[in-house]
Length: 251
Image 1 (cartoon, one colour):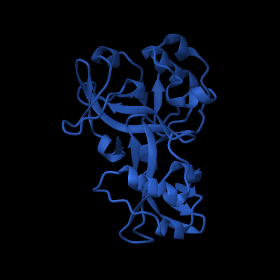
Image 2 (tube, helix red, strand yellow; image 1 turned 45 degrees about the horizontal axis):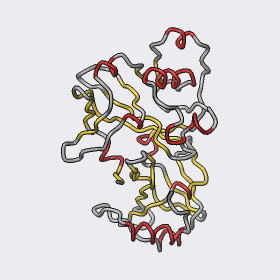
Image 3 (tube, helix red, strand yellow; image 1 turned 90 degrees about the vertical axis):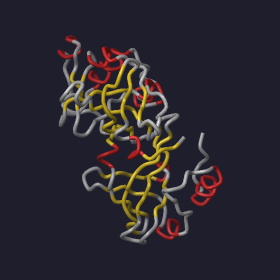
Image 4 (cartoon, helix red, strand yellow; image 1 turned 120 degrees about the horizontal axis):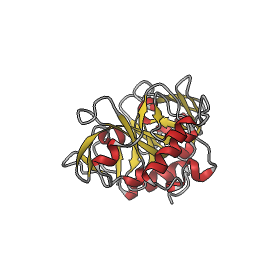
């Protein structure tokens, strides 16, 4: 099922023995748009803490109850490494989280499975609880491929021949925890329309200028099937959308 990321943020995280906080953000790898981490704010339970949970521990979102289950206990989360703001994530740090929970670093074909590179997380860093890892030599910065969904919202979108709008949200496949589409608000260019763009159309992302470039033209976007935020995506619409842009079929 696909869900907008804004609807997933704020869901209550339910461990196997109680509630532990809410979804604060998603961190994704910009090479394959796979979600690598869910950032959990532990709120009143553990005030002042943020923790990382890997998608392989997540269950299915329940929007009727506004909850997202995780296959962890409260004790596991309480003793886990937490993250701090305004520092990059190092390779040793992410390995520490994988090792603590016994998670598979290659789940979903992410960064570790591809090339062992360590992503950089804007505005957050992992604090190790393991003494040996904490004493390891840590690089000042990680690989700049892990990105925050919250930070990427509102980025301007540049077609090959001009601007077409800005990112207003993402559609996420909550089965594989992959960002399937960028939701583009064209109000400043073509008022009243929202369109979907596949990550496969992205040619570059300028994190300093906060822009995303795509290999489509303004006319192609203007004539694309319009996305109705109030309607669920069905197979027919998705087929027409991908045929319109000649995007590769979904695996």
